[in-house]
Image (cartoon, rainbow, N blue to C red; front, top):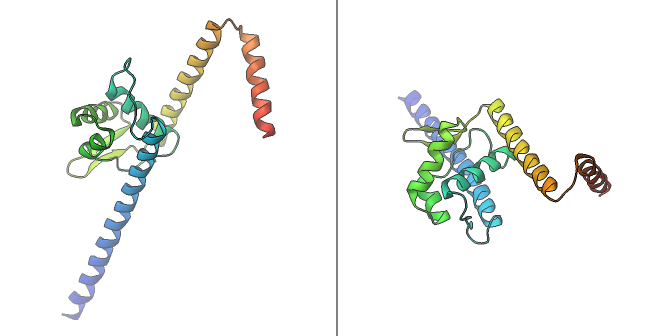
Length: 166
């Protein structure tokens, strides 16, 4: 009888601790996403007309993962919670999550929620691909402005030197 009594409080405390730990991690992810949403467009994210909203939400989540603001294994907000925060239709969030899952960036556990992949190679690849897209966009814009490759290299080198001094 005493053995059973000793085990139950321990199990209860472990369960409560794990629930608290998961709740704290979830709160941190919500905070990180809320901060990104706030920083990307005032009180609420402002969406661009030239790109579907679900893709813009995907890009926000991808950049949060690539930058480390959201880590592998973190639970994403529920579809309803994020749709309420972003003031978009829940189907839009669901589509974003489905596309992220199709790309193996997140996974869904029935009854538990949607989580970021813990595959560090996948996250590295995501980060690398996003960097390539940024560099490609930069180079295309510089070429449109009439700069050749050598001029671009000079400008970038000068900028890097200035930034290293700070």
